[in-house]
Length: 633
Image (cartoon, rainbow, N blue to C red; front, side, top):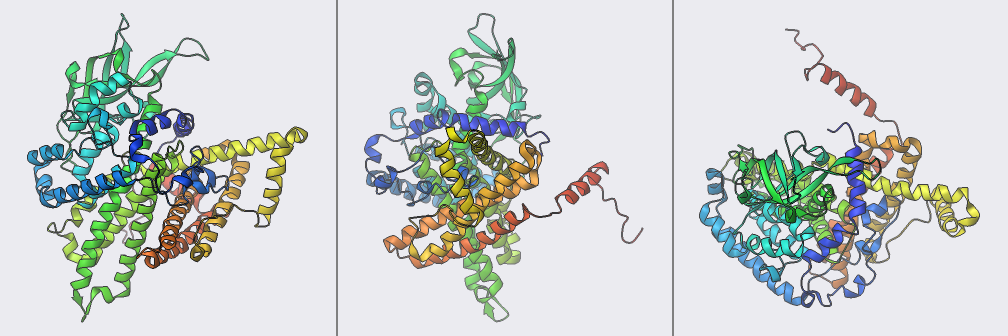
């Protein structure tokens, strides 16, 4: 893991600065024509929606931004629902009848006929606006369709499609000029051109600022000369268009002279000097193409700069933030497939005279699967809807969706294999392939450990700014009576466990569960403030505390999403309302236990120091145990 967390702080700052620019561009780029959105069932609630204050950012200061989760967002209007329903049916039929995951894996590539059929299906440009030849699905529509791909159990095909449109040409959608969009999007939408996102290098993984690929401006100032190497690029051997990030010299306005800053470029293979290595031999997602990509004296025209020169890091972060929501949705589909396989086996398999489904330990496994699926679904579609509503502050929620879904899907699939026993270990059942495919999801598009630090550090940064503002006000109370009049009584009440933010729209049946969330958010805010006072800037190096804060944030956000969704079901009298109420109550009970445990650990003595000492000793011994073998031979 990284030793120096300055890049993460920079990522947090870049995310904050980009909220008004890059994220606004995201909303504009993927929004459907106005005729599609019109007046949705949640139009009245949308009037109160706060686009600039995300739910997760708020909980680090003990605040509940209710409009981010209540009522459960519904952004689809009838004509988009009809179009989406038809496309879901076609896509489901395609993956049931045409795509062959086992054959793709055996080939180590998507079968050529299947690849071409995916183009005919329109699967390569789902969010490309109609004016550029795409269907123009909203984020919510896209999420629903990639869920179908995830449920097909062929995550390799999912990566092939996602690497192309979720990150490959997403930069053109978000930051491209009208000329760039006109030139590239029509052929990217049809799959005539394949795109790839080229960021990772041998010396840089999660630390995007440390890349060594370099672009130098030519003497006449008309083009850049690009040189460097990129590693593990999804679609690297297929792509004709690359979103490439390289170091460039930019004016240093503070110190004078120049400094290095990352710039994003649209690079065509046809420019010359672009080559790739052979496909990597991977543990999973074997049908997706993953290669090294090399750039040697590639002449990139100035008009192919993507975003401003020197703003490449912001461009990269906005692309990744915008793309992560799809991963959460796709993996809910994968979890559903795994649970269906496990349930079918438990319904029929007889052991010790009874079907497996009658045994408590099997019931526990299926129930935990259902809980994780309900929470992941609730997060995925809250997030996508808020993006469609124009949220400019969804980065933390997107990171949570990726972390939560990638870990939940691994657990669900692993437990499904356990339910099937030896059958689950056999290649005749797709579970073993799904498990291998899933392992990468906790690593790429931001390793989960790094995303946890991003969540915690970004949330703390906002809380720290609020605390600093209060401290400044206390030094000049007469000039800040309004702020102090609001904050001091609230803090006094919080000291006695009162005055916390509450949920006003939760269904009465769920008030007890909502109270757990309310208390958790209040205590979270107090805990963050105490940590900031105790450690100040030193908090950035206290990884284990930061992880606990991130885990609390993940649980609190999931609680909010399931409370909102279950409240909708109860309010509407849905056929599944009683079941959803049970899921919600159970999830909140379990999550509350984890929240309390982690918050208590943040205030009490832990073994963190001992763990650090043990690890240091193991590293110094080259990873070998220090103790003698128990047999002494």
